[in-house]
Image (cartoon, rainbow, N blue to C red):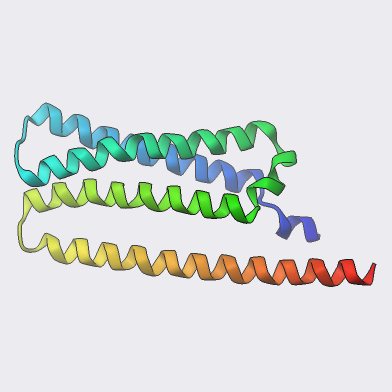
Length: 155
């Protein structure tokens, strides 16, 4: 029963992989739509740069997760390591900010003053969710580490 909580399931990794490839697809769709429409403004330029930066980041994340799925349960210990969690969190944050920049640039192009409320709300929501997830994962990781140490001491 302890292994269920200690290591991620293959379904969890598959969901993360699918989400990262989907985010890459959204960025590609936005980039192609902007190019096809031939729009030119500063906000569109920022949106294109965000999409061009986000596509390889999301593809990189998806490829790493695909490799974990390919290797299988033998790789789950590394997937749960502290170094990988930090690296994965950094890549996910960079990709998320790039995706939000892409969408924000498009929305700013559509409406100048109302979109800032959307962008501010999105950024605040992203920050709050990220802090919650980081805090929750650290609390879970710390409690699991303490439990593992306690079990090792009893053995």
